[in-house]
Image (cartoon, rainbow, N blue to C red; front, side, top):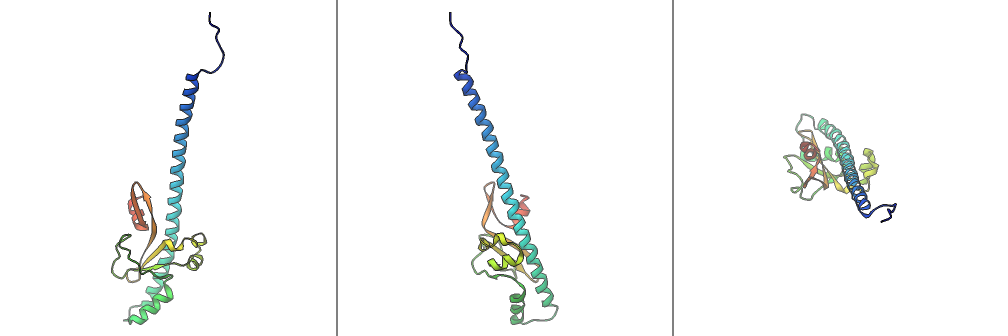
Length: 164
């Protein structure tokens, strides 16, 4: 007669390992989704803060444009006074379509600090603000882009339009 041994059989041990691997896989996937969502929310918050501050700059510049006829030199002086950043001269066609009177500016670390976004000082070169004084529009471009479901979103408006 066989003597029954107490202990864990190889089959039970294998089933336990498989169940633990499934639980770990679900937990890791859920954790990665939470991190990705937190990154998106942080990016959107930063871009919204830049847009709000940019809107303030555009409104101040537009106020000083007034209703009178200004020379190009006067317009340039107002832009230099009220719009933050330095003119961004690179081609932005792969990021967004610029409209008439849109002007792109890249913010410096000092500009970021002045706005209150000290945590973006190190990455200030990744953001470009599109000002349109005449239409009082502002958009923000995040140059590295945000990847979501195999699509790359560069502008705050495109992220908002996609509903992500």
